[in-house]
Image (cartoon, rainbow over all chains, first blue to last red; front, top):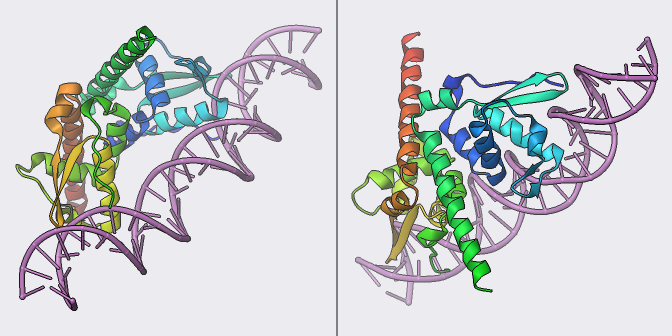
Length: 122
Length: 122
DNA sequence: TCTTAAGTTCATAAGTTACGAACTACGGCA
DNA sequence: TGCCGTAGTTCGTAACTTATGAACTTAAGA
């Protein structure tokens, strides 16, 4: 098993961040990590937003988030502890993560609304 | 030639925006469009940041930006006039575009700095 | 009508992503 | 110590996406 690599904060690129967060599963993971007060293991996310994610796929998603510099992962025994690198990124790119997370919140709120409307119309 | 399609602002998704702007050529195009006070044609961007982009590739990039809802394109005779949909997006996702553009500015400023350092070191 | 300029489309090669199957690494317990 | 189960990773491959040259469309002007 190759060792975990994390980019130094100075090597984190906007392109990589945007690419990582342009996937619905990855933003969902990232959002939960950023909200959680403590590290979360990968397997916490085997089901997310009522969708089952295969283990191998999940592992790739975590790699993408890690290599984009969005999260930090540490192996502890058999499990991995993942935390968001939010504060570091905030320092380098002020407002970026906040604006993205906020936009996602706006979008999910709207989706919930149209879903309710569709249900009511029946 | 199929007609140009633009998503209504309500159908614009964060994922699509982030994906579109996670490409260096596309952000460069978008940034110039957003700064320009008037519509710009596609061919303005055949060379951008000292890089030549093939016409067919450029056409695809414009399609991605358009379908993500980031720009509006109108055919005028033989050419296309492109403008950013910045104000609409700002209304739907406040702060998003600003934060992304700002992060890109931070990053290019830093890259220019390290490039100068490397040059000075010779 | 011919030519030229601006974009688009198509075919295809190259690259990326998703996911099952097989694997590794660690911890616990007999 | 050896075996088992759990947590993740890696590999192979099929499906999808992207980049680009060549051929095409459309409009303007000579």
